Image (cartoon, rainbow, N blue to C red):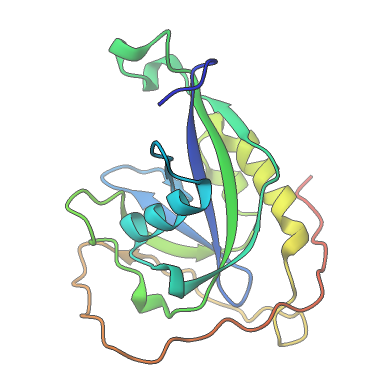
Amino acid sequence: MLDREGFRPNVGIILLNAHNEVWWGKRVREHSWQFPQGGIKYGETPEQAMYRELEEEIGLRQEHVKIVGRTRDWLRYEVPDHFIKREIRGHYRGQKQIWFLLRMCARDNDVNLRLTDHPEFDAWRWHDYWVPLDVVIEFKRDVYQRALQELSRFLTWPANGGHTHERRHTARYLRQPHAPRQSSPEQPCAPEAELVLVPGKQ
C-alpha cells in the first residue's frame, strides 16, 4: 500500500529500558542493526500496527510496554534504487513512518526473536540513546535523528538520581535456545517523572 508519492506507511519503535537505553536489533543474516519497524496494513491505525510489529519482531505484547510518546507527523526516507526490487522501481520511493517511544515493563528474557517462522532479527542488545545515529545505515540516519530528537523530550532520568549504571552491552543471539515463558507477575512500569530534555547529538 503506497501513497500517491510512492511512500509506504510504516511504524518505527524505540523501546527503552529503565536506564533509557534503547533496544537495538541485528537483522537476520546481515551485519546491519536497526530499530524494529514494519508496514501498516490496510484498516490498521499506526498504534495497532505498532503492537502487531512489536509482537511479531521481538515477541513483546501490549502488556509488556507502556507508550511514552509518538512523533506528531510522518517522517520519510527514500530507499536507494539498488535496495529496491526491480519490478517496483519507479513506483516505490521509500517509507513514511510514525515513530513510537515505548517503556519496557517486562524482563529481558521476555524478548523472543523466534515468535514467527520468518524472524526479522537474530541478535539484540541495549544501547545508549544516541548511539544508533553512529551505526544505522546511511539512508535512514536523518529519520533516526529526527525521531530520536523529537521523542527525547519524553525522556526522564532513572530513579537512581540521573546516574546511569555502568552496563555491559552484551548481544543476545537468536541461535541461543529461548527459555520457555513462565506465568510470572508482570513488572509494572514505574510512573513517569517530570519531563527532562536531553540535548541532541550535534
